[in-house]
Image (cartoon, rainbow, N blue to C red):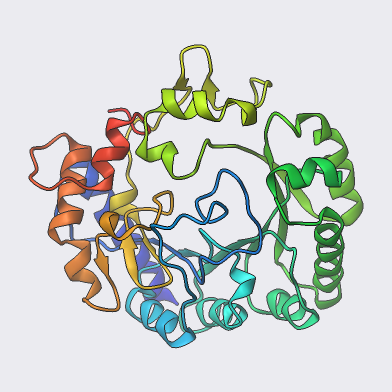
Length: 334
């Protein structure tokens, strides 16, 4: 463990030197991995390209051996791994085994996942709590069925509450350190249920956080903010505390001042396609390469990643990547 500790510290130093000194080709490795066990989902959320059944994205499930191959190559550098993104990870029958492989020896990587919790078997409850998973985020944006299902189309809020109760009970029985965190995305239609959500979270015995919504999760990066705000105005909350947009000016309130993600992290889709972050919809035209087809180092310092870093550094570059598009549309403001 001491060797791993020092490797992480040295890697973090090289990461910081990379972006602070303006290196587009770097010597460090990502300290965080986001990896999607599947981009299938049982819900139809209207701001999500998965929920909207985007025809430009291939869908499937990552196999356990494929997952292990990624962790085997990157695990010694990783400090954390997020096992979720564009789908419901519980739909992948190997999900608990993936968590266990990452959390236990020899890797002992901090793991986080997120689920809508509309489907959860007794075996999965026991497996999640015993897997070494550090934090499970439960996506639930309402208390009454009428409010909840306006966004989580196809879901049942009482099923989510019952599954949170079962997880909390198993956590207590097993004396597990797992954190169960109810994340409530605040939108215009559910603002009025915030206080009741806090009360129910306390009764269930889970933490609760209130997240900022985004306009359409694909176009939020790929289209200008003005167009996104105009189109999705019905979802944007009234409360200044939870409203991430300046509606009058049609801008984001706090765009990123500098994006460090192409130096710090990487995202691997279920099919091995690599992207600079988990915010980018997984269309092939935006990928940096495929980790099942090419060595990761060839991708990490390949021409597309290098061009993306140059763009964020304000340096001349020849290849346009999704980072160029993101910057141009004001998600990142230099």
